[in-house]
Amino acid sequence: MARPLRIEFPGALYHVTSRGDRREP
Image (cartoon, rainbow, N blue to C red):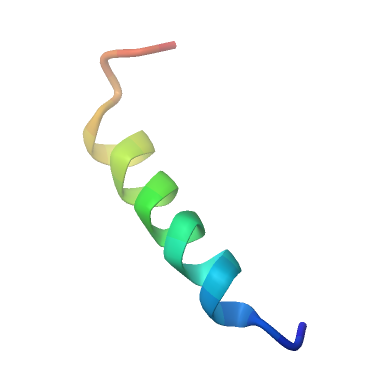
């Protein structure tokens, strides 16, 4: 957990797209 930026960047984007883009399975 030394680079939370790399995991937080894609993680937050994935979370937002998954919650807002619930058109894909």
